[in-house]
Image (cartoon, rainbow, N blue to C red; front, side, top):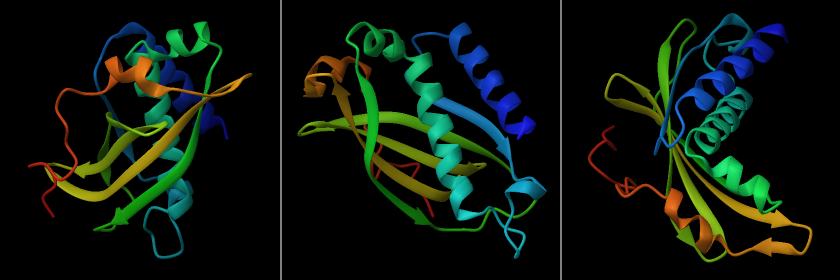
Amino acid sequence: MLLDKLRVLGVVTRAVLSLRAPSSQLSLQVTRREADLYRHLNNARYLSFMDLGRWDLTLRSGMAAQLFRDRLSPVAVQIEIEYRRELPLGQAFILDTRWVEVIGKTLVCEQLFLVGDRVHARAQVRVLLRGASGVAAPSAYRVFVSSRHRLGGPRDRG
């Protein structure tokens, strides 16, 4: 519990100090607490790390300030994750997070779990922006979408 709080505090502090970054790259490691019985990263922890990565990106990009001004909350409505390789106990990895496109009423976020240049897991998250009057059009947030669209790109090596 304390480790999680310290990790979140560190992410928020670093994010605030580097505003306007187009992506988030968190350096993480699989600890005993995050491993399953088979000594691999637990499936639920992938989702927790992904939440942390999206918050880091939202803060770093300056999107959080605009969401606050517009009184909107991001809500993950669809998550697709492809597990390609295990992340064993003790493994250091990078969680690379980026807004990649707008589809309909959702912003699409791509998240890669990388060891070196190899993708161990790849996720796509669709996010709605909700406010008091309902779902907001994400077009005002297109400015935060990465100019380098990565879905299926060269870093998608197995």
